[in-house]
Length: 270
Image (cartoon, rainbow, N blue to C red; front, side):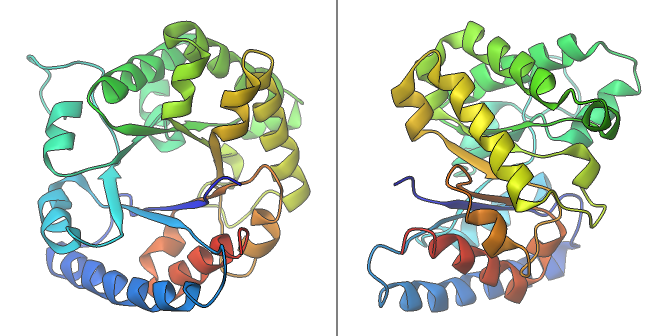
């Protein structure tokens, strides 16, 4: 059984003072959930937070020594150099980060405004994946279709394209060092979530696509669902056998709701 992971993406939210308070409150509530899980055989969950990068130092100071993990919302495709505003994988690692988000749809939108070809965007994701793994970070690679792709029935085509590029870049076994996150773009920040049945269907497709290359990697890799996950719909979504947790946006800023989502993921193994 794969250990569920719940990742809270704070995006560009939370001013300095409230960020510190949010981290401290999250830490306190996490102790509560850990105590609850001790009474439930086999129930477990990994929890990771993704604050804005300017708060990574604060995050490291507050969360060090706890069971909470943290990561960066983005990473550069380059090791170093004249890339103003970029953050390298080595810099991210120096702040104690375990994870890094790669290819989030909201990042892709910035590139799409430059009218870059989707294949080029996928190659950029692959380059960031390589930099992250080489620096000991676990990338959470976001993958999903736009509203137009969804209505046109191109979901599997879009997902297969990126998976094939990732496998071509470093081989299928290297994917075991990553986490994948299916995020239907039409559900990001819209309040509209994929049905549990649809989420499971797409997650199953992802796992089967990887299994064609290596069944062992396919079985071990964690695949998260991201797209308007709330306390109310989390249990049904996480019930899918191929859904291994969630990439949570807005709900991760509400500590009580986020902890309930984490608990729902933990019950999957309990």
